[in-house]
Amino acid sequence: MQKFVTLIVDMIKRESLLAPQGGPIIITQIENEYGNVQGPYGNAGKEYIKWCAKLAESYQIGVPWIMCQQPDAPQPMYHGGTNFGRSTGGPYITTTYDYDAPLDEYGKIFFFLFLNKKNL
Image 1 (cartoon, helix red, strand yellow):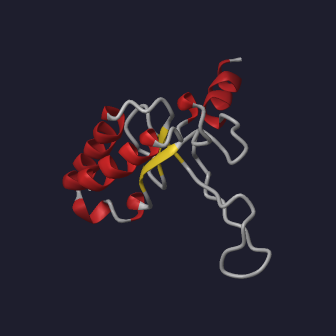
Image 2 (cartoon, rainbow, N blue to C red):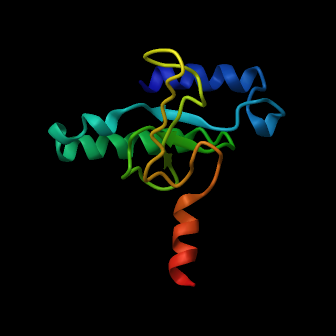
Image 3 (cartoon, helix red, strand yellow):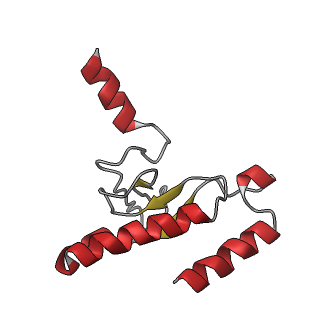
């Protein structure tokens, strides 16, 4: 995985595709749907997620990294996801699974809004 991610990160850097370079990429994803299978691996599953986060942060690409379906993602990772209205599984069906994520599909910061309301 490290070789593959390094290959991809090097490619997008070389092509100046990251937002800090003037490109369109504003967020990146290091792992997908692992939260659904982590349980059977126990502590090894949690260590893998920590390794993924450390790997992602080591690239210092200047945009946030996310982990899909990973509510216990190590800081500073976000988690969540949506298909932004694209159909999946049939016409006019959209998916969103930003529930319990700090960001929704519109960029609203639920986690911080919740804390602010609670502290008022």
